[in-house]
Amino acid sequence: MAAAAALRSAAARAVRWAAGAAAAGPLLPGTARSAALPARVPVSCAPSVTAIPARWSGSGSALGSILGIPSEKPSDTLGQHPPPVATSKEEQDRLLRGRPDQPQNPKVLRIAIIGAPNAGKSTLSNQLLGRKVFPVSQKVHTTRCKARGVVTHEDTQLIILDTPGLTSPFKAKRHKLEEAMLTDPWDSMKHADLVLVLVDVSDHWTRNSLSKEVLKCLSQFPQIPSVLVLNKVDLLKNKFILLELVTELTEGIVNGKKLEVSSAFKDNSSSSAKSPMQITQASPPEKGDNTWDNSSDARASESRLGTEEAQQPKHYGPRDLKNMKGWPFFQEIFMLAALHGEEVDTLKRYLLLQAKPGAWEFHSSVLTSQSPQEICNNIIREKILEYLPLEVPYSVIQVTEMWEEGPSGELLIAQKLLVPRKSHMTMLIGRGGKVISRIVQEAGQDLMNVFLCDVRLRLQVEVKS
Image (cartoon, rainbow, N blue to C red):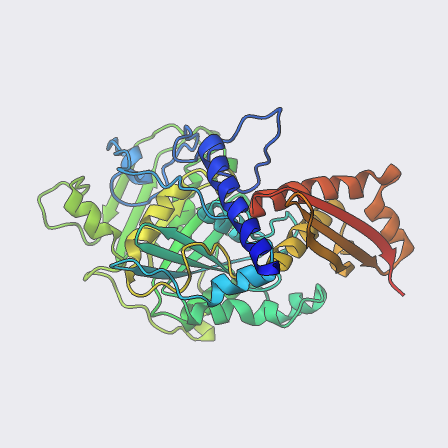
């Protein structure tokens, strides 16, 4: 009886998923549907407002745009509808333990995303997945442990290893972080085929150099191809700052080729309009004088990680890292705005091209390795981080008291929030219950987008004894 009911529930959710996907388009992370708001159009169909394209080299790149080389439209769209997450732990465990539905020629790529805290790693992971399954907050250390996201596109599977921000033992002790916050990024690197290094270019205090933790991580795994991703480029008024940042963050070397970029600006100019530039590469292509070859053969060759001309990465000691600001062994550079999904599809296509022949690790119906309860806890904690000041939200303890399916197929969740002081309880509830009501509303909407079913969420705040 129970098994049959669970089967009927899963079938009903699958029908709702298919119907919703056909009617409203993809659910993008961070977007909530309501009667007053139109459905968000797919990123691949929306007009881009980014002034500089995503890729650094080749057709459709930043330098290509400045040099007047026309970009080509992609041949396909990646706006597929990702599957919902199972609402029961048993159903999710069955999918995770089950044998993957292997295609005829499967390909796989394991991707570690590393960077400083609050660089946008979880936001980028959610955009690549097409659904919000990782918590996102403006406060640091929102992601507390590593989790896997799964992108399945045709015969290719991307496994995204979302990790906590790389931090030092001193900062971990200051924020009372678990030991996993220090070890998880390193463990993810051990299993990665490729690493994305995310940099927040809107932070003028940190954007001009990679953190020592990131450089140490890259130097410990020099055999893993690395890609630099400049995030939040939409917040830059002067896009030419990106050229300076690229030079500093790469030590002037990209894919084994030395880049010398010089430009003539007025000192007071904040415009991103084109200006005279001189670009020199130490290892120019052999075919004629045309550095930018737009043929399909050229695009295929540049999409592969590594070239014969590229220098081999090496181990760097502590003294070497002390004097380094960037990493001279990045294979590619991408520029995007993960929060709005701008140019994320460009990165996604590149990642799909890097996948190598190999068996899938997950069933195509799996979106994340997290349990439904873990996703729920993370989303509620994300809202608590947003609405409580300073260090207060880090002391809140969540206890799930009810998780069951209602008579109409809705998901009923009741959770108790334990705080150490009465003053914290007052802040969390808010005047007239406005804060806790807003948390319930926003978290409930996010959970509905994850599970694709109605969610009834109830939160109760108490002072822990």
